[in-house]
Length: 79
Image (cartoon, rainbow, N blue to C red):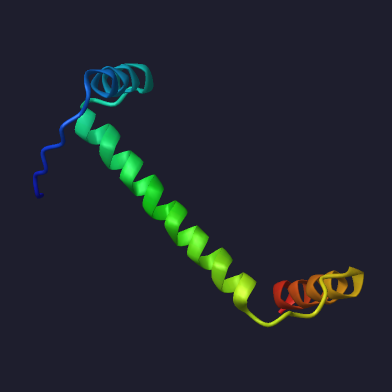
């Protein structure tokens, strides 16, 4: 595992220490790793949303669409 030193203001350092204590993290590194993982996931979801927004319009998700979907699921579970 790599190492990275980060300089924080006293206020940010206090905040991190409070979060570590309040949320049950064992170290500030564990807290920061969790923040980074959440940010990675947010970026991944943002990319998926942007890809979806840029894609061609699909068929409307109306009652007929969901009825067809339910029928396909029932057929697969009965097979």
